[in-house]
Length: 279
Ligand code: FAD
Image 1 (tube, rainbow, N blue to C red):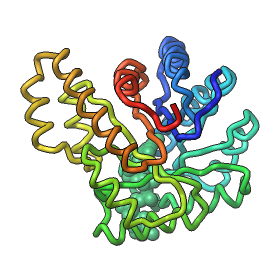
Image 2: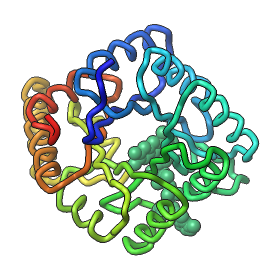
Image 3: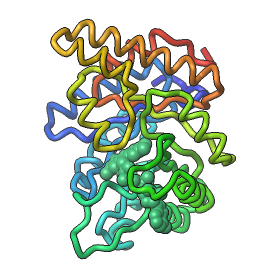
């Protein structure tokens, strides 16, 4: 295991569905470890749909010696269920979590009331104390449910006030959106840009339509032109995202969080093209 760098590099995974997927995940983590990430994170299906699989993936990565942050949302769960899960994480040595509301409506029964991420941050802070790092989500291009950018920022600031130590953003391809958000949020905790490598035009369009991330027109038209030419699409995607990362680092971003989709290749190709501030 390498020593983590100061620059907050982190890699996100989703929980595999099979034993084979779990083995591949450990291989991906091992391949990315040479970059000296501060932590890996594992997503949580809305409504607790991956409760056990997320826990298993986190437990395997933790016992392999990696620092891991499980994602967690309240979904329709009551506080007792959430606290029990947190206790299980604490027992295996977890010291950092990503606290979220989770996506609606998939994780919430129609009669359930929505619990915003701020409530989970407060619950975690109360339950595990201050020796625990809590990350929250941030949206440089505004969360799609928010009535206005101002209200979205106000809600974001409440999560920080409730005890978050840092934030990770939704992905974006326009560095100005990130710097504008950081300036307007004006919080004392690091806001780490979320980076989505580009490997498929159709998937990127689908994800982006769902989460409200903008694909700038010049990028969209080039990707559309490469739809049947995977090598050119990936080469262009790597150019675009590496240039974005360089702009973010030059502008003072405190770290990078990669949405790896459990693949080391696309993320590593970008990292090979940039120089991180601490070598
Ligand atoms: P919140 O901070 O609760 O905000 C949600 C919306 O409600 C925003 O529009 C906000 O402005 C508004 N809001 C907040 N508080 C209030 C209030 N008191 N009154 C009215 N409106 C309010 N989803 C998953 O299901 N699993 C994951 O593992 C996962 N990981 C993610 C990791 C990152 C880094 C990011 C950026 C997102 C992730 N998501 C994940 C997606 C996330 O759950 C969705 O974007 C979700 O819709 C919002 O989550 P949040 O934690 O940002 O919510």
